[in-house]
Amino acid sequence: MAMLDDFKKFALRGNVVDLAIGVVIGAAFGAIVQSMVGDLIMPVVGAITGGLDFSDYFLPLSSKVSAVTLAEAKKQGAVLAWGHFLTVTLNFIIVAFVLFLVIRAMTRLMAQEEKKAEEAPPAPTKQEELLTEIRDLLKSR
Image (cartoon, rainbow, N blue to C red; front, side):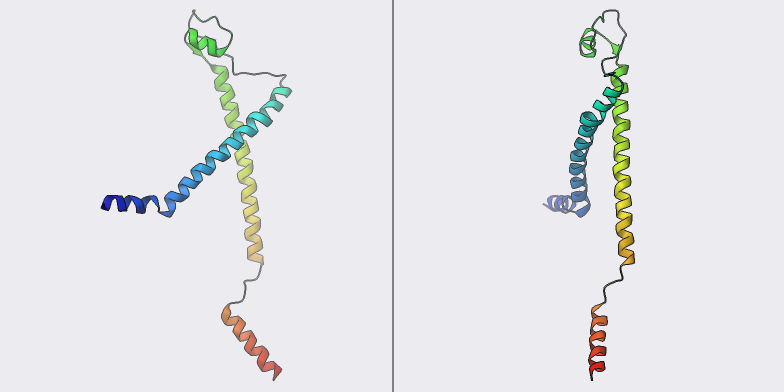
C-alpha cells in the first residue's frame, strides 16, 4: 500500500503532470509543423524544382533488383535508399528551421511582455493605499 501511495505522489507531482502535458502538446504541435512542411512548404519546393521528388531514388545492392519504385525494390532485395534519406533530412531541416522561427518569435514576444511589465509602475500596496487615504483625509481638514 505504501508503494501505491508513493507512486500516486510521484505521478501527481507537478513536474510529472507538466511533462505529460508538454509531451501531448509537443506531439500535437509536431503534427502541425509536419503538415505545414508536407502540405505548404514542400509543394512550393516541388513547384520550384519542377516536381523533383527524391523519395524513390535508390541504389540497388543486389542484381535481383529491377524495380523502378523504392517500395518494389525493397521487396526484391537490398537497396540503398539514399533518396528517402535525403527527403527525410530535408524535411528535418525545414521542420527545425520552422521551429527555430516559432521559438524566436515567442522569445521576442515574451521579451516585449517583460519589458512592458518592467516599465509599468508597480501597483501600490495596501499599506500605501491606506497612507494615501489618511493623507487625503488630513488635507481635507
